[in-house]
Image (cartoon, rainbow, N blue to C red; front, side, top):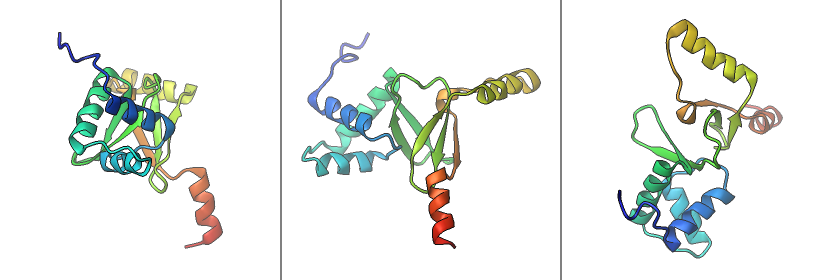
Length: 139
């Protein structure tokens, strides 16, 4: 077993604390900038390594685009066993923990033989506040 698995540095604590306080999906660069804005300088390498560590231990979720070229991260908060939704306008994310989502997963398994990894499943769209802004401001 790797001796560093539970090794928690001050930088890791800063990164995880930042993610806990900011519920949006963020890129590593946004995390670096956000920490710097709060007066905490953390190297790019440290942020990427810490994010990898947190993804492995389940405390942070990683969402990639279709090509796998870029990723955003979000604090899992111990609740990654359900679907997520992400607003393409503001970047906010929310958990979808309802009976419809459960029945959708059951349908995919029973009718298509497909098991969904809910912790890695995210639906993209526009949230209600952003839709309201769009309606108020017009095209």
